[in-house]
Image 1 (cartoon, rainbow, N blue to C red):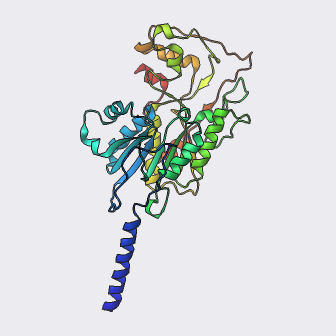
Image 2: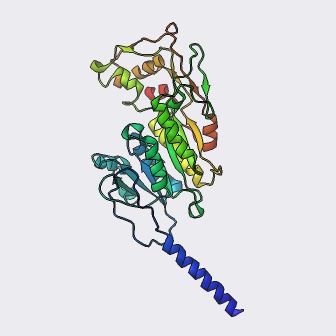
Image 3: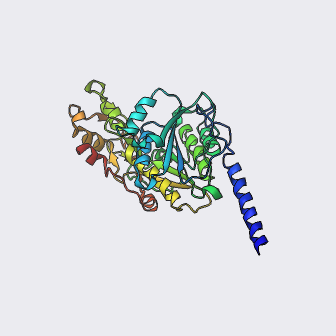
Length: 353
């Protein structure tokens, strides 16, 4: 009896030793074509309850996401690493993410492409870098999946890879000039695929191949000084556009940057809770649920003191020219599944606040 117990103890010890020795067998390839400038992880890392998340692309959306990840009360043991292509904005990003409170400093770091290599992988990844920064966008997403993410394994059962795509993948809204087609997560893509849409389609395919993959198709993003309204009305009165392409009554679906980050956070938490049982990745459609016409967007903006001295531009699109009226997003399934709702209910209310 004693000998049998000893044999069990010896086997358990041997398995434990093996797991420790394999714990840091990282893939040494980099996320981008150039390598990351961080020191390699130590050769042996003891087991820990701490989870780690990589945020690829720390622009406006990525910065907001990092802030929310660090401050979420359910993720107190989460360490966040942001990946950028250069260190030009690192000091600004650190200031924005950490603020004046240094309590999050030990859970956040930035890494840069180009100077060194790390084979470290992360429990979770959020890819929110835009296509404009890559010659081959789908390849960049695939590289991140293979080289940065642990994927869903026995030791990382609830790992998530969240990819922020765009609702622009559905095109301009079809050929209907009178009625806005309603778009959901399962709506078919347009028959005519532009190069921009093709990039997104191929990038999404890399994510949906993966168990634990989340594709978030985001509505048009905005801040007070960023978005379609700012492009039309200008940073100053002198830069305002006299004419704007498209119909005045053409529909635009909108989403505040902070809400886009919040939806990404919700997807991550859904996976951590074990809510991603599908063998393949899932697609979601994210908006504030209150689409606005081009004219309504401009009128709402004029209520804010930043744009109070502007005037409405002339909209050059028309039914007579066959310009489509645009599409309307129905993200009700997404909201329910992710247990998420926007902080900023609508663009009009945001501009009026």
